Image 1: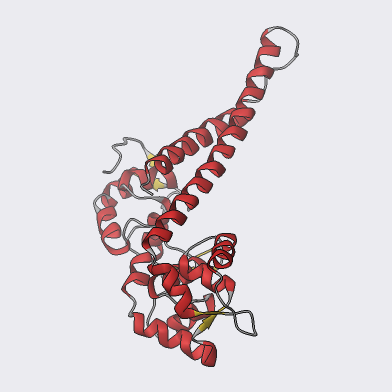
Image 2 (image 1 turned 135 degrees about the horizontal axis):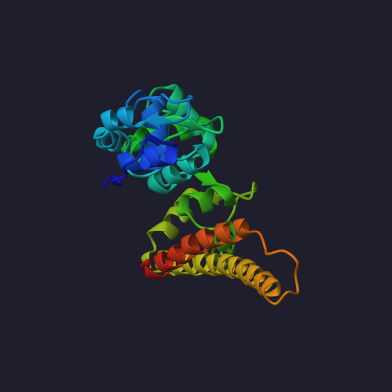
Length: 261
């Protein structure tokens, strides 16, 4: 729901909040002419123009959805997991070139794609592109490609491939059928999902600990100033950043803890 704000002018963050949009949604809305550009100094919106734009946020959401677009690497990984083939970035580019996929925008000079566009792609078109690239190698996959298909960490695939004694050919490649059989093993998929969840949670908790150390250090410097052991109080800017980061990381921990295995 749009944030209710009353003010004389709006910066980018406030304008997005007024319309109920994430910053990426506002950016593509501006890019596609669905939202008016700033009319004050080229970077702020007047109250009049912002008021006229109210209601357009829903149109932007309807067109572009709620999920942020992804770059070519993540697009390829999503397609690989969906169709069971080792899709690469160049395959995504071919799909764009032949008109099967739209580049929705760019980020730091790189094309980005909507997840729902990727999910709507005809699997047959994706397979045809991958097959054209791989030629006679279409029925085999290297370890990195296998990990991409399975959406597993590479070291997890290497370990399980060793445990299952999966055969490789003279090029060190695995049979695609063997990799797809791993994907069809529901018990194994659940096991790996739990391992990935635990690894992600451990990494996030390490981030939390680092942020907490920053805040404790700030409090120590603040105490030193209060006790007259320091001539100047600590700068509050690092504390503000740390507080925001801690709120975000603890929300992420809560989400990961609630994610079903």
